[in-house]
Length: 311
Image 1: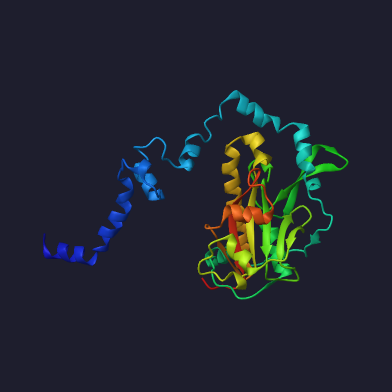
Image 2: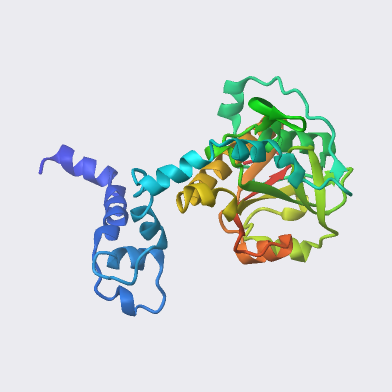
């Protein structure tokens, strides 16, 4: 090896660490099934040797969309083009009982450059105080609010159009609901609320909230939740779209949650605030706090928002 090659290896010695990190996951371990603590790495190392020690996600993907050409599946899909199905979509606003709800102020008309907002968006973990109710309402509206409609060809007196949300949804089912844990929004009491997009309003789930209860929701790490404004929990109503798509409905719900989160983060950035998606939320704890059964309604994502632009 000549001097230039030796010098190159010395300057790039960290390549060995990178290769070691990347290649360790290709190793096969026959002991994965008997390991007491099965980290994701242990599971991955034993995945080609074991029949029982596997990722649930792998099993789901192996069985995902295997039936698209089946007659029964196609019949099920076509069922939702029928008039009664379209009318049920047109009457979805009836699910929102507005008794005792809080009407939100009209969303702001955001004029920020789209390209500059995309470039400026970052995950923000340091916040500083409350945000106004109007900005809170604006974030919700552009996340999931009603932004348009489709006219029904065969309309009825009180069901003549299907309302459309700011984010796309597989089959137009919109199975993801937004729950808000609010503690620093000016003009709004601390508590838990559900967003009603058809009426741009909030249903009160619970009022009052302590810092200790907030801490239980997730592993916020470096984030001081007391200085943040609110958190958004994305709740998937399993039976809303699974009666058409079966198990594929879950994948569509995760996609939809991601699209809502992106809308929320871009709106937050355009308003001069910050947000951060939280992967380490305590799912069952959050579901209990939101009053969900954890079966037909499940939390699949979690985001925290606040006043601040410090990464």
